[in-house]
Image (tube, rainbow, N blue to C red; front, top):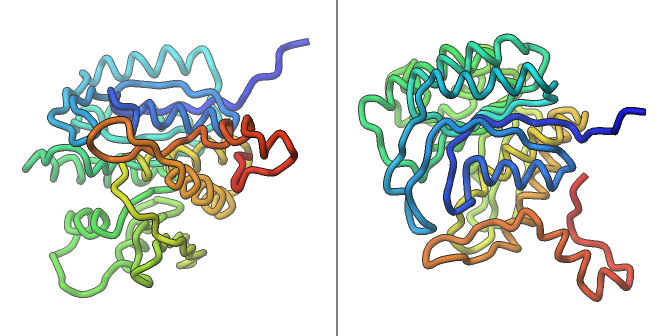
Length: 286
């Protein structure tokens, strides 16, 4: 009898020496959801918990070779695409995932910690819109990032065009758009999920005080893992938010900079005396 295997999730992302974002964050979130992570390095970050000082992009041919070899050997249940540092990498990855149209794809390319890449970033945004958005199951994007992204297809505006911009991305071919940090009460954080019919759900969460690195990476990776486990998108989005908030609440300070979400908080709770006495963890992975 063949061994039962965990769902496989493949991530294209930057390597972060701190483990707060990028591949390391993805692999931790995948494991917390019972998945096995496969990782393709798109760039190498140089930095600490305070800031990312530099980004070294990996050659596009190397990125493609990493992925092709793995995909010829193993079937994946979901893709996660994170930070991409060159138009060439966007093009190479778009060509690869096009061969797997039935595999869910989570796109979370906007890493605020990355240094500004100037004019090249405009080309990157256009490449993302034209090559990856049409293949995306769910795009994770903040309100600030959405406004900037939208300016690749419309003029800058002082009007509130959030819903219009999100729906335009769906017109471009993205199935779902999860916009984080949508307007709400100052004490809450709201995230809004858009689909082809408009707003599908809006979830409000109490704001956790502090400065964190890796919350968005945790959220997108967890959604990818939950889709690999067979959940539908709205349910995966809600459960991933629950897990991410709990990870943030249990964040750890490794250095002198930002706090890092603890994606294994549930494992430590299960070892605590209260857990041994039968108390359940506040949020458990599914």
